[in-house]
Length: 118
Image 1: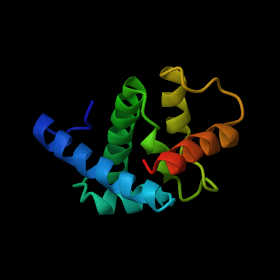
Image 2: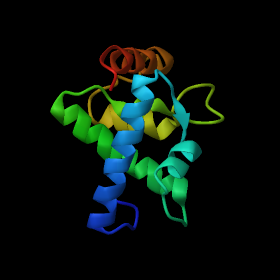
Image 3: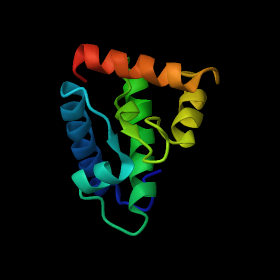
């Protein structure tokens, strides 16, 4: 499930991803998928796709641990401040999202992150 990455490389990138997202949560800021791929030095090809796969893994881990969903900080450049549709699909599969108001659900996740600082 790592998008073609080896297990060791995937875990190292997940650690960087979590650190970058924690920093942005503390600063109460979102970032685009491209900015995130750059920040974690995601290798190509398919850098954005690989980054979103890692975000899905982190979302599952955060949900299982009862932590705020840090993946909510990654937004689509064209999404008017929202994550890409795949984020909401994954949230639905994890029983976090009922398919209702996506903007309200996303804001709820951001509020939880900003309250705790990640």
